[in-house]
Length: 270
Image 1: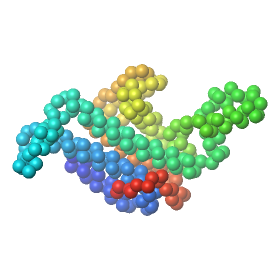
Image 2 (image 1 turned 60 degrees about the vertical axis):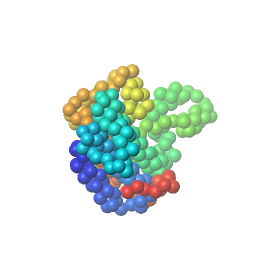
Image 3 (image 1 turned 30 degrees about the vertical axis):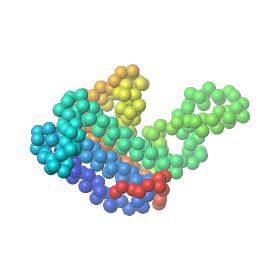
Image 4 (image 1 turned 90 degrees about the vertical axis):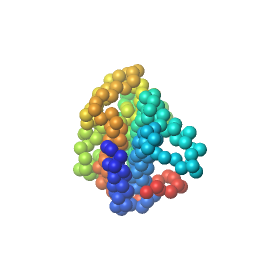
């Protein structure tokens, strides 16, 4: 996506936000606000890289008033002139957009899940997620089982995809996208995000392959995840956009919630 198209896309997001019929501090509205800021930051990062090219070619002139800043401006030129800095700069933009959009997506799904899931729902999900433990304690006395179950409720980590599944299963036919494809995409996005943010690219887990558009991703235990394809420049932006589309597909599944406050005292951006 070139800069003109990227700028146009940021404007379309603003229009989309203006049409949301929710309070501005609702968690669902805030997701789109945060998505906008993440895309805009990505856009500014790309603009800065292009500006560095103009500076390096001498196409940007500095007046006497700002000439002392020239020495710092030349460092912008180095970003696009040195391969090491260029790769690092682009990689940082990619990490930031994945981390930013995924974090807001994960938080919003979790808040919706916590609002709608009953104690009985939680117990069922925790039992399913800890099925091996449940089978192991079947012969224990009820008191001991109760203690273990209470500990599981307090400490069990419920994966994002399970929370997502809970939300879409509550109302038949509420989801407006391809549920099977979107679930698999979320499985992929979790692995990619964990590799990029937590493990410096190293994957831990069962071997996994995913094709996103023209880009192929392969994850092998204890190895750097591998990426191959012709869309290296825009694929991380496209992944972020896909997350937003999945959230839009989900909106009707939680439409009975009139208002759910975003847990923050700050101001929304858009």
